[in-house]
Image (cartoon, rainbow, N blue to C red; front, top):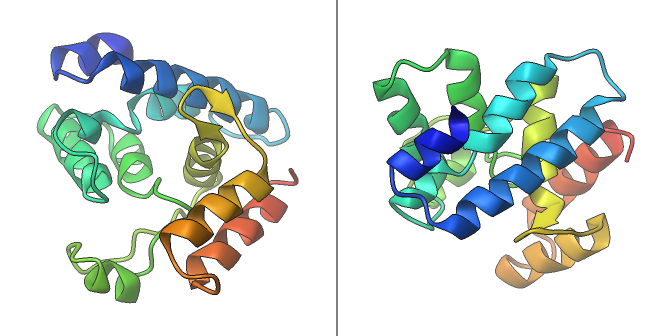
Length: 158
């Protein structure tokens, strides 16, 4: 059903392929925890649904809006909204031009999907050093998001 929705809203094939890989990685990570694996799988498949409209940092918010309009559960909507990097705190969200709120993953399911997305580049699995270097190039060397990524990686025991 999730793949059907991605197609229905016009997500390009690369988003669907990426989302399938993120779901696989999220389920692999989730083996180490007592979590809702069905929720993780569905949210991971839908995490980039906002990319049918934009590839900007807004895609998480847009994806959450699409799912809210279609009556999806709040738990899935929150995962989609909070999946970027290791989360975005309110102060950084404001600087990025996002609606002023906290976009930090809170539940284990939210953290697992966010980090599985970090560890899949396109359709290829990458390690944490690749992810850190990628974000250092996008941001500055000592941006707080870098430490959040490392902390999330440690928290998930990877």
